[in-house]
Image (cartoon, rainbow, N blue to C red; front, side, top):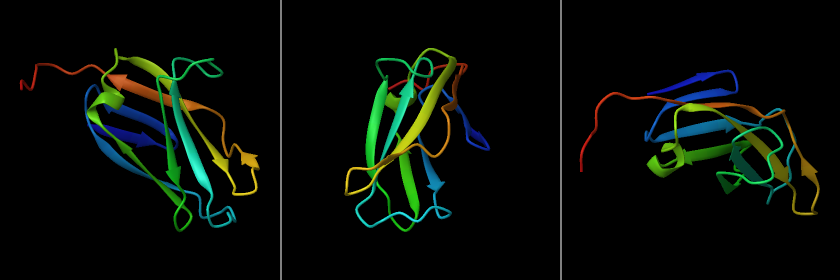
Length: 109
């Protein structure tokens, strides 16, 4: 189960998802990349994981695998930074909640 409320992400532990992040309001040069990070708290020194993704047609396609959401249920924080080919970095919004929800049962192997 995944639930998106604005920029807040709620997902069941161990689930997968494909999230399209629309950046069409920003004019971004070709070759811009996005760094998506999930941390225990905003401003943490170390991330649980990070993904570098190409910005294509004004959007970023974030693919969440089971390992990306297989953490203890609680609120984590995600953010996105954009890096243009000339090295400029933009942070389009402050860190947002990324909540892992508890699930009941085990899907087995």
